[in-house]
Amino acid sequence: MPSPRRAPGSRPSSAPVPLRGTAFTRTTARATGIAPERLRRRAYVRLHRCVYADRELSLDDEQTARAWLLALPDDAAMYGATAATWYGLPVETPADFQVIVPPGTVPRRRPGLEPHEGLAPDDATVHRGLRVTTPERTWLDLSLTLDDADLVVVGDAMVGRGLTTRERLVEAAEAARRRRRVVRARWLARQVRDRVDSPQETRLRLVLTNHGGLPQPSVNPDVGDEHGEWIGRPDLAYEHLKVAVQYEGDVHRSTRKRWRADIARDEVMRDHGWEVVRVTADDLRRPSQLCDRVRRALDRQRRRLA
Image: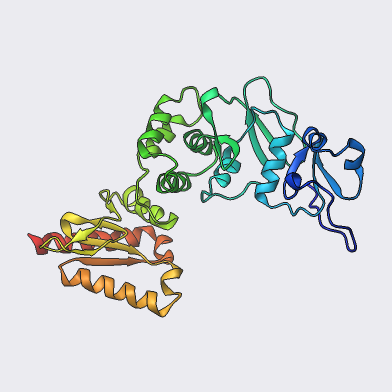
């Protein structure tokens, strides 16, 4: 897609105020007083068939999405990784703009566009002003392309942002019929959790449970002392055995203040009988050793509390 830049020495845009800073259709231009022949002048750039923009407009991801949907049928919606990106979820932005339309109306493939068909009436919503597949449909579509961990990461992020709930993802997966890999999607939907703060916390949880066969830990629980006073909120916790598992990302080492706060946090929990296992990205690359560390911590606490 051309990225319009203001040419050296060019005049300020003559676009009417309502059309500045956004893409628009030829019909909209005519309604605001811009004759079709004016659209062929230097002040404007053609983005798609019948879709134009002020030449001074810099096309960021949002403007690109708005321009594509103006060029497509009204019932088109962003799909797959494009939809996930529009929701602000942790996925890689696809090379092509992915859209989906109802059966039988798929637009022709063109450079930069990846069209799909099969959109049901209840599978689309409006988010930030544009049509996009619902969070539940988006998650199911991503189950065709993402691996297990990445799919649960997206599910956790959806729930954390208030876009959906674990229960709604489970219901959507159970209701899906005649879809590839739907049995896998049903299993992974049940692994989605609330209160997750980062993708690495999700990956840590999945390593412990799926790779190591350890019990499901609590996610970011608020824990207290014997008097009910709050003492901490570990990333993962086996509360009955007082074992906390803390993921230490690079941000935790970025400032002296954060580093000291993390040390003080762990010391408070240890003072109240907790064992704290600190985990880094290097540990996630050695899952067997990591799971053994956590298992030993659980065994020590089990013996101590017995």
